[in-house]
Image 1 (tube, helix red, strand yellow):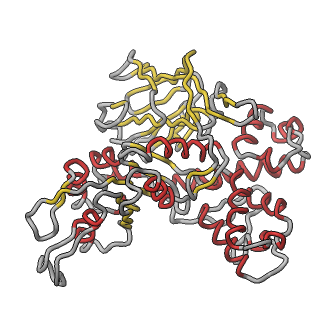
Image 2 (tube, rainbow, N blue to C red):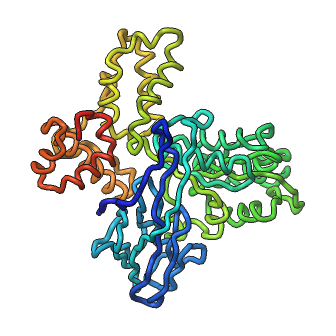
Image 3 (cartoon, rainbow, N blue to C red):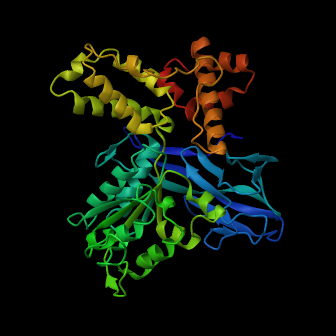
Length: 458
């Protein structure tokens, strides 16, 4: 279920027409039934969490509520409530949802508690970066400029950062750029891939070991934390860290001290931590696979990198960047139908995100075909999507809820794209043909940035 976003969302622009910030009405949650009936809770953060765990912004003492039940997130369209894989679900306006936009008076049922979303007269403003890049990352879209603003704000500090996002969105690149923009930039940046390390060796990799502490330990070894002393450790795929090691990591975060495997000697380390996950760790909290105290300690600053399909206006910018890197000199002149190709690219799902886009362009550049038409490489070796209403292949690697939500969004995007194409971009005609409200169709056009690829839509 995806409801229309809050109508009062406003983009603040300067004299040149450039968006400077997002202004939203401040909002509160009013409990109208359940143990908290009559109480109000202000939404004061970009990500407002609700659950039975003590670390949530709103804690519900209810056995039917998961530790990390749901969150309300500020997005460019307004306020979005998202279920975090809870056991008993999040019910909005009587329907169980994966995510939904909140409007004035929206009712949310969470276990025994019913809350109502209430926008206030007072507004709150969320700044965007004035830059369209942060180091190696580029993007002119509102979601990316918000990411850049947060990164610019917290990179110079020692704040612990959690980066979330799908595979291929650039989490490691962002982590390295945060390090490069910090006061630790001249010290080591050490990457630890928690998913790639053997479970019986990961303690040694992180903390080091002494000679003879286990079979094969023929000498003392410095671990990643000691090696990064003074610098930054990037813990990639932190969700794959075993439960037995999580208390030890928590101790490093809190005490800044480690003990090598096989040693009783405590060693002090001065390390900043940045971690990342391509799945939502709140689901792991509910399943008991990840410690709640460690999660909140790692998430002092949370940055969510948007998937490429949610920032299609950045695809041409990224495409030109990769082409210039791969085609030196005047090689760009060999590329034909670039704008037409970008229209097709903006309609593509990009399940591999920015990495998939770069890989495609790299493959095309090295193919030797000239003139170079990138569009001919889009579905090379794959099944093209159905241009009528329907779905192409999908991956079973995704959780059911995530796959279902992606398919719903893909249906909306394809349906509206084809609808506008058949109606020559006439919004009123298209709304009548689809038997939906004109305002709702306009919101879908905005949501999927279809005005950019269909300039006649009005």
